[in-house]
Structure formats: C-alpha cells, structure tokens
Length: 237
Length: 227
Image (cartoon, each protein chain N blue to C red):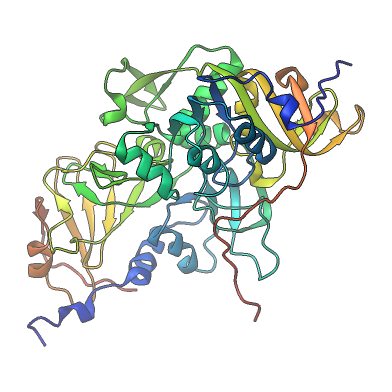
C-alpha cells in the first residue's frame, strides 16, 4: 500500500508558497484543519487565496491568517462572525467573493469528479449571475434558468478528518464532515490532518468516506481545541 | 384602545413561528433558516412527523443538548450545538445541497429583509453596511417549491418591507410563496401581489394596508389568525 504519512503540519505545508490558492475544509469552526492553519501562520506565506465556507472568527480558524494579513482573497458563502474580516473587506485590503454555499460545495465536487462545469439555479437573477453563462433546462417538470459555474482549481486542499490510515483513507465524524470530503477530492495536492492515524487495515473499507487516492499527505494532528462558536444547551427538568 | 397602542396586538417572534408551524405537514422534510424560522421547530404539533434538515449535513436534527453534553463536532447551520434524533443521518455539504436542488426537501422557511410582490427576496447584503453573505439561502430559494418567509412587516424606521420591487441585492427571484409577519399571513400570487390570508390578532386590514407598499389583495372578509 502507498504510504501517505508525513511527520507533522510543518512538513505537510512545506511547499505552500506565496500567492497560492487553498481549499480549506470546515463549517464555521467545526471540522477545520487547526494544525495546518497554525503551520501556515508560522510559515508566514502571503497573498493566499482561500476558498472556505467561512472565514473563522477573529482569533481562531482562518481568522488567524487574516490577522496576520496572509490572505489576499477569500471565496466564501458566509462571513458573518468575524470583525477583522469585515474591517479588511470594507477597507479594500481583502478581496472577497461571496458565492452560494451549494455552489461552493458543488464546484469542489465537480473538481473531484472530473467535470469542468456544473449548472445550478442558485443565484439566477442576482448579482452572483453577472457575467456568467446561463442556460434553460427542463428539470423535474419545470423549465428554469441555470448558471454555469466552473470546477475549482486549487493548488492545495487542506482538510480535517476524525480518523485516517497511512494510505490516506479518511473517516469523518458527525457534522465535522461538512466540506471536508469534497475539498479533499478537489486539491491538486491534498493534505489531511486527522485526530487519529491508524495503520492500514485499521479502518473498515466499507466505512471510508474519502478514499486515499485523493489524499497525498496525512498526519496525526495534536492539541485540538475544537472550539464551539455557539454553545446552546437546554436545562434538565 | 385604537390610537397608538396597537403594538400590543402584533405577533412577537414566537407568535410568527407558531403561525408558520401550522404550514408544516406530516411527512415533510423541512429546512429552517436562522432566527425566527428556528423557533418554528418548537411549535410543530404532536402527531405531525417531520424531519429537519440542516444544510451543514444533517437530516433528523434534534433539540439543543443538555448542559455538559454539547459536542463540538455536532452543530447546525447556525453553528449552534444540537443533537441527533433516532433515525437521523449525516452527510457532506455537496449531498446536502444536492437534496435541496433535487427538491427532496419539501419546505424552506427563512427570514428576509425585503420581499417584492412578485416573490423576489433580498436577505444577504446591505451595500456599504452589512455583507454577511448568502450562505445557503440562494441555493434554497432557487430550488425549493415551497418557501415561507418569516419577517417583520415594517423596518425600524416604519417603512414597509413588502414592496413593489426589492431595493436591496436579491437572493432569489419569483420564489416566495407565503409570508408571515407580525401583522399578517399573506400569499404571493403568481400574477403578482400579496394576497391577504389572515390578520394577526387585533390587527385591522387598514393597518396591514398601511404597512404594505406592494400590491395588497384583499378579497372578502379576512379572518383573524388562530394560534
């Protein structure tokens, strides 16, 4: 079996250089590659374009790379919880492209499935559609207009999984799955950090979410904080 | 009682959620947006079995966890900690929006800043002021056959949010089917216009007319909501 293991986050991101485009997994702070983000902060690469559903919060997640002004452009669907982000966006320091969440997910999927474009109804008639090719299709008994959207092209994808094996096979846990599987498929080089790295044979092939063919580098991360953005609970009676 | 004290009768957020809950039918898969729509889950009547979809990858979302049982890996689309019900499933974001586009999700309930009389909706951006992003809203409104909007009828300055034409950047076009506000329940009719279905308790047709800038269609006697 091919061995995909690298020592740690520093080694995994060693050839990420200035001005590259990165797909970064996670939804809010859930399922984000904490170790790799820290390694990028330490490495100090600049001018990054980050494609990620959100932009973290001021002091965690991609917010850390915003603080250090390492991100030139963000492509996201929702950026509501980050004051520094808003400041950089309104001042023009940070370029921001907001796209529908399903479009974001499906453009990753298209990249991993070898399809150059997708057609989606999301954004038709809105400013998201400006400059994009549209076509009418009959679907589900209805004729509607669809927007053509391109598969992402990214130098690296960085994802976080719950478990992985040395061959790069990944298993995600609960809603920390989110964008991670399709981003893993979409990177030219994909880095996966996992909470638990096991030997080949340690994962049931039937339970693997992302096959190792999509994962080029894997390592076991450490000191996961797994911060919760909004703790909401109910009282016991 | 007539002058100026009518606020007393308007629905609060929970009232709006309660009214919308009546539109939720047995067997539906439902996506609830952030804010008032989330509250709808609290008012779904016993015996009405629905499955809540959260677009970050859950079918069968349950209530908030008990204190101390929150799980950082288990959140809803509003990034709040939640639980899973028996029979729930977890999937990735592409499949989540796949089932939305394929119209497997029967009902979408979401908030809005503005709705126009032809069913356009704006809820993601105020140019120069607020840009949070559309999240999954554009995907949801572009695909769902049944969209109910929970919103305030007028803004803080007293201006109508039910308009001839939206002034803010659109989230979707000709998609809203129903609206429930603090004043009324309305239907957006295919030929254009807000057809008044019900008045909130104690609210007059006149008040609703005054609060609606777009075309309001009033046919016959308008019943008061039963909550």
